[in-house]
Image (cartoon, rainbow, N blue to C red; front, side, top):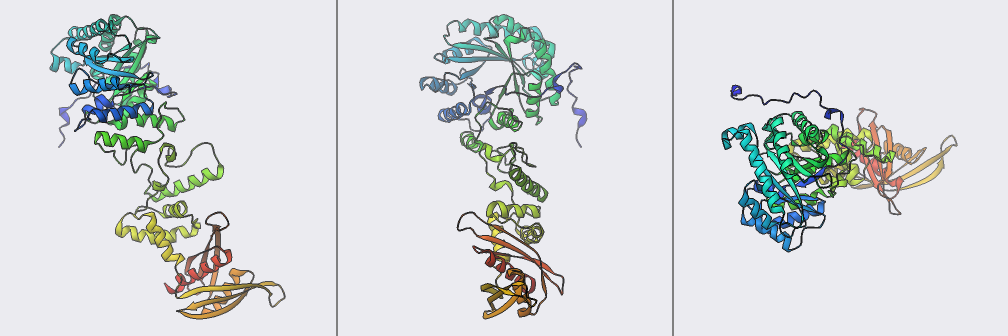
Length: 557
């Protein structure tokens, strides 16, 4: 039994004056990728220098203007990576790299050695301020913890005097979500006062991390808005958030934080990071895109991004991962397949400038995905899904009445083997309809005009066919080719049939276009009905083939 009594609720913020619920996200934040720091330290096999460089180049290509490249004072590989970026001139002039460092002098000194030659840099200092860590990790009171932040700021200011690039300071009260709000503000204000150089043109960054998710996203939003409204000289502050995903709500927490006043987001591609990960920047960016908001990132090809990510990190992307997963644009449910089919048809018919298709929040092709895998057929699929595959993959627009008949054929197969690939669906369609040519096999036909017994215009059909391999002929007179062939078949086979419906369409365009004909036929004696399908470059031949297909299905299957 779950030991519920072992846990207690984390406190919420009493903040009735909140305004964020009435706001909407209207623009992209400043994005800062921390893949090369938070993401890399969480890998089972951390990236080597060349892999880091490949990843860095991808981030630049995607349009990130701020990239945290590591903790150069922490290890030689981190230091060497940074120097490789500098010496190989891989950092574009419009990209600001970020380096992380604890508030310790020897580490800060080493960090400034590492960043020499970089034109634009963020020096990111931090120390934990949470109630729990003050108690069980550092054994320090509030004033002592605040002093760590002040001293770290003073050291950055000291060494910055000899740095000739464009430097910004970032401070993070680590474990912000577990820190009293008024105390978090007190520490940030002390850093602000110590730095003393922030202006609207050259602001200071205060990064408020959800180092561990401790509550629902609305609580984080309340915390962010409270800080947003209480910062001194707010116009000289960039309010940054750094959410993690311990409760599985990192994306939601970030989006609500943006409503609450955050200007900047630190995260990783696909959410890689410690424990359950950092917030997934791509997820948020694609969410914005789906609402018609420019995410300010070049993310048109998620498959290419995923390929580099998986190769460099040795991690795999879950098939259900939003936007990037292999199955996220795939529908197995029959009702979903039918709705997607109808939605795509309506989109085409209405020629709308807006994407509106059920179950597909964005056009997969906009992010480098394809329509082909949208519908896959298994035992849970329905008639609409099978019809969609036949139309999308092979151009056969099955009449609505035929959807269930053919879907039942595929359903039996899927119940035995599981998923049925489009190629197998087409194979079954050919076997059950197009190649249904025995024992009554249509060979050729001559259509001429004639008169009926009452002197009216009529059509005469002279048909050559084989019956169990023996060549035969019949003639039929009717009000058109289909009616004439039907009457001739009734007499030749001794049956009573009725054409209930007839549909036809071109399979492709151009002078070599083939026509597909669908004949819905009924045996008058038994009431049994079925469809037949014929294909030919001649519309009359395709319709006659459809009749013979239906007759073979109706009387000889």
